[in-house]
Amino acid sequence: MDGRVLVVEDESMLAMLIEDQLVDMGYRVMPPVSTVHAALAVLEEGGIGLAVLDVNLGGPLSFPVADALLARGIPFLFLTGYGRAGVPAEYQTVPVLQKPFRRKDLQTALAALGSESISANISLLGSL
Image (cartoon, rainbow, N blue to C red; front, side, top):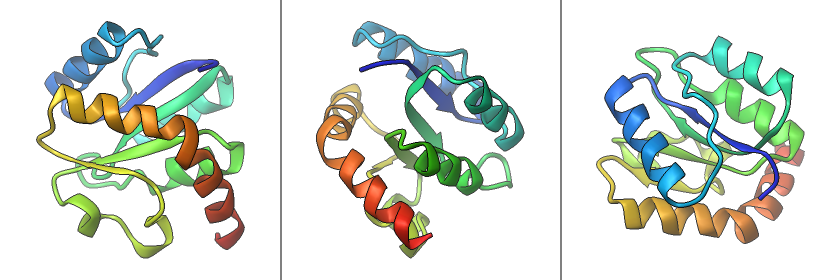
């Protein structure tokens, strides 16, 4: 994977846990961010190869970040306590990892991004 992983999560303990798990898996990880504004600013700087987005960021939803990732062709997955039901229909092809999750589940979801999600994200972009 080229670039670093962007983690967008508003719960600081969970963000640190995800960051640690990603580093343990061999990924290069950006410091986690907790807002849509901060995530969009990081994307503008470039160097992101993959992203993990919490859907609900303490009220605001991360869908503007998802749209920006789709526009850039950067694969990503959603995290949400609501599972697939917490994601609008226009994002149904984006992988969803339901909270709470196990490290193995995160690793499997990230591995799938390298193949399935890139083409799914490109086709999804055309529908936005």
